[in-house]
Amino acid sequence: MEVVPAALARLIHDFERLPGIGKKTATRLALHILRRPEAEAQGMASDLAELHAAIRLCDTCFAFSESNPCLICSDSGRDGQVICVVEGPGDLMAIEKTGVFRGVYHILHGVLSPMDGIGPAEIKVDALLARVKKGGVREVLLATSSTVPGEATAAYLVECLKTLVTVSRLACGIPLGMDIKYADEHTLARSIEARMIRK
Amino acid sequence: MEVVPAALARLIHDFERLPGIGKKTATRLALHILRRPEAEAQGMASDLAELHAAIRLCDTCFAFSESNPCLICSDSGRDGQVICVVEGPGDLMAIEKTGVFRGVYHILHGVLSPMDGIGPAEIKVDALLARVKKGGVREVLLATSSTVPGEATAAYLVECLKTLVTVSRLACGIPLGMDIKYADEHTLARSIEARMIRK
Image: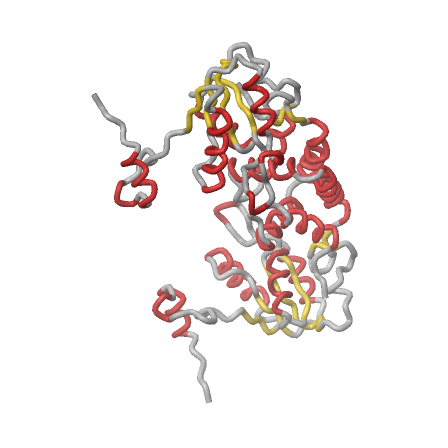
C-alpha cells in the first residue's frame, strides 16, 4: 500500500529529479518543508514560478541576468578589453567571488564533447569569435575546467583565436595550502613543467 | 558587485534554508532548474504551493495524510490491536517499506528532550495513552530511534504503558551484513547482552 500522500510524493519526485539528490534526501527535504510554516513553501513556490520569466541571457556575454546587457557588460568600471571565457554561469560566480578579475566574461554554456555530439556550433563559440573580430579586445583568458573536455575546449579556442588576440589560460598547479606528498601525480607533474623562475 | 540576478539569488536562498544544503549545493540546484525547461520549475512550484493544503494529520495516528482517518487507520486489513510508536513520518515510511509490520501507527512528532523544553505535553503522548486506555489494543511496539532521546522516550512510554498493555521495543544489535570487527563497541556490547538462545 502507498502510505506516502500523493501531494507529498509529487514534491519528493520533484526533488529527486535534481542532480545529486536521491530518494532518501528528497523525502527528508519534502518532509522538512511540510513541517515548516506554509508561508515558506509558498515563498519558494513563487520564487520557482517566477525564475524563468525574470532571467534571460545577456546578448553579449550570455550570462544569466535580469537586464540586457547584464550588470557586468554594462559596468563602465570593468575592462571590456579582457574577456574571460567560462563553461557555465557557476564558473562566473566562482571567479567573481575572488574579486581579482576586472574584465568581462563570455559564457560558453557547455564544453566541446564530440562523443556527446557537442561541437563548436552547440556552444557559444561563434559569438565569441564575432566579439573578438569586432575589435577592441586585448586578451582572452580561457577559464574552462582542467578536465579532459575543458582542456580540449581551451585547445580548440587557442587555435581559433591565437592569430587574432593574446590568449591566456588559468595557471594549473598545486592548490594553495596543499601538502606536496598528497598532491596527485598529474597535478604535481604539471606544476613542475610549469614551474616559475623566482628572481 | 552582486553578479547573481535577484530572482536566482532568491531561489538559492530558499534551497539554502533546507537541512543539509549549503551555499554551493543551493547554487548548483538553482542553476540546474534555470537550465531545465520552465515547465519543470512551474510543476515544482505548484507542488510546493499545494502541499500544505493537501495534507493534514490523521486524527487517530497523526500521520501525514490526504484523508482522515488515514489510509492505514481506515484499512480493515491492518491489525488495529498492535500500535507501532515512531518519532516522525519518515520513520513510518521506513517501516512500511519493510512490509513486515501489519499493525497501525502512532506518530509522536518528536522525542522527549527536557534540555530543549520538550516534555510529554509537546509530543503526542497523551493521545497515545488515550488510544490505549480506550481498549482494544494488544501490544504497543516502541520504534523510536536508538539514540539517547529516542531511548529516553521509549523508557518513559514503558513506564506509562506497562500496566495497561504489552509493550515491546525494536531489537538492537549488529546490523545484517556487518563485519563484527567494524561494529562499534556499544552496539556489540548490546548484542552480547541481548544474545538470543538458538535451540
